[in-house]
Image 1: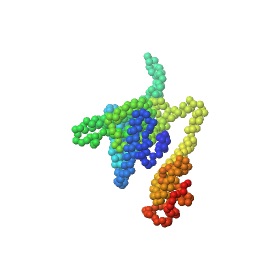
Image 2: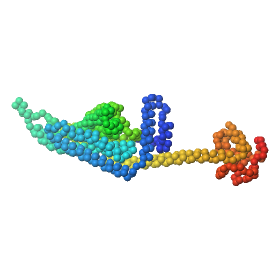
Image 3: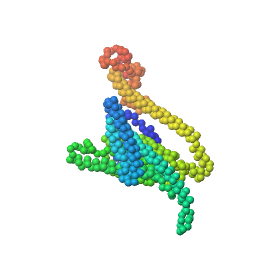
Image 4: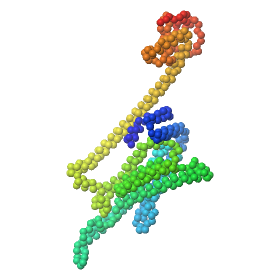
Length: 547
């Protein structure tokens, strides 16, 4: 995210001459590979299409009140869908706890929770996308809203599943406590009893306490639930691609010739590549792996196989069955948004794991933490037994709340300061862009004014008598020689140069050229007439003196 932010700060595109800049500065002339050139060409084409969409969105006239009403209505409908999906998952998990106490349970009853969650993840995103058509957002903004809603759906379903699962864990902990008490009494009677072998009473062999009870191991049950959820999500994803994309594309392609309407242009048409669904599927899957790998370490291997097969399977589906979005936009500008979702799911996935490590007692008869009051006690025992005393003392001092709380406050203040500095830099960058824009406009106005002044001066030059014009041209030809051009620093041939010098008088002296505005068309003047602002010398009566 930090590297993407550093790259985005160098983007100076402010919308001015957007198409001209894209036309003349987009190509990379260092490209020497044909495949890279094709990719660059496709990227530039997408950039032009995106700019056209942005221009259409900026020039679109809309009824703001109707748009606000439709957006509020869409959000209300989506909130109702989210609440309904959460309640459905909670109800199904509670129902599965009843099924777990029964002896003869069918396949659907055993996997009902995973099936319902997978079906919700398959049908709710298209429903959200249909509702989002009411809002009429820009494609990039609509994608972010869609991602946020699907993320809320997945996260709400996952946390509802965890809350219902915690009730099951608490029941198993109470059951383990009762089994533990029964086990202690059984062991007491076992050690006080004797066994008769070949007519001889002997003491029974030693028996480890973990071998006697067979209580419910809640860590194993939680791991099994996560494995089932992952496997069912894999199967639903593949079935969705096979049925919703491939078979749909085959039907549209081969039945279009004998159907009543155009299947490719109308309903059902080819399936668009669902960017939001695929991205959120990866994020949600990664969150499940982070959360469930603590209880089922083999889940990591299952996830690796899932990612490898899913990459090739979805690549085949994209190349054979999907079409791009109708409204083109560049999704790479939303990279930080995707990374932010992944960071958030990482934080939210570690919260339940940290809670179970710090608060819940482990199973007493299974797992590496059996016999401990809390899983966190293993860390303290390791520090006391395996580390030198001074290291344990340093670590215990660092873990003191009196140091942790000030450190957290210091980090909050540092984040606030850096955020303020970042906003100041952004404002300075905006001001600098405005100054550059103003300077560009001033230079443009100056060029336009110079063009107008040159045309006026040429008109004034036409007012001079023919002999005076010939003298001016002779003078300009003299000053426009290579030596004088370098001296004056003025480019030859410009209209401003032709009148930037002086005109000769009859007595050989130099007088400045006239600089008056033309307010009336030129007319013949009588001899000796003197108009205001006109040169005060009569019409020349003879040749000029040679210089």
